[in-house]
Length: 369
Ligand code: G6P
Image 1 (cartoon, rainbow, N blue to C red):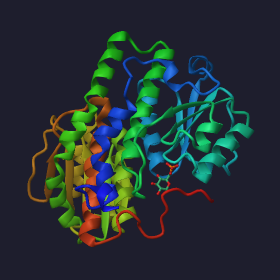
Image 2 (image 1 turned 45 degrees about the horizontal axis):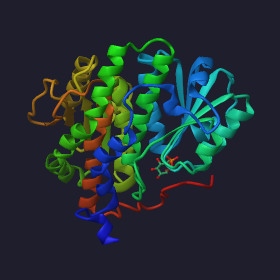
Image 3 (image 1 turned 30 degrees about the vertical axis):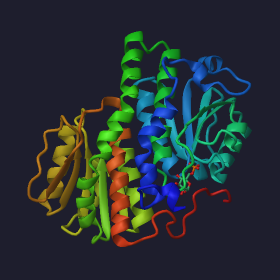
């Protein structure tokens, strides 16, 4: 009801603004990295982590994209080979099982039919070790997985997932650090540095949320468009995917995401002044490459909307709109960069007058196939 919404127009907006709290709650009491954070009702994560040599992440929708981001962390920080697959594909595919793989399911509801079926399929192929990152502690997913990390995003009502996504990323980053530690790859100094960065997340999210007026100005432009392209590289490619998903789910604008290096292999042909191009451009190792991708877009009359962080040297110009994030967030950057993309989808949908919390044809939880 209206009372619960407080100052917000929709649950989605309220949930976007709840992210500092959702992350604080999800990370509450985490003062050290230790495998026990992932213990299941009857299983010790310390033992399981010693028995695995790879990770297979299975999920759907937004939860799948948090898994895609986690792959970059798991391989670069924990040095553990990681695959990510859409649950509805994995469950019907002939794959090559590896009993030493840790199968990780990610689910807000813990009841998504395809993700549960994918888990059971993996178990039928001989998977010994399973872990879920899940927002509902009483769900089938938590019951059926050996290990669990319960995110504390709180009840999510908006069909388009927001706070559950950032909370999943928090859980997945912790999992990365716990696996790195178990593999002897996390020094105490690094542990302290990461814990400090995670503690700062609620405040960092708060300052990103304060960019809302600038995002509303972008949304005015987007509301009149029928197509949009989202670009990112590396860890931010999954964030581009999630930004495009949010926009299509609630504004019904056709949006797709590409890893920016693939632009020249197809999507560049679509670029005209009618197609806004959103670029996630933090100052990381790939920024220079990304800048040359952006140049290719501008040279074809494309209009760029760039999320740059405090360290990226990119200035607004004709056909180039920049929103500058308050800081550089290092490894945690995806959790911050997704927020303006959530707000962009939200305000574009509001400007188009769609039913934001209940988009046509979509359900909050898909419990039948
Ligand atoms: C539906 C929802 C999405 C969600 C997906 C997976 O499509 O509309 O927001 O990401 O299901 O749901 P899960 O509960 O498994 O994360």
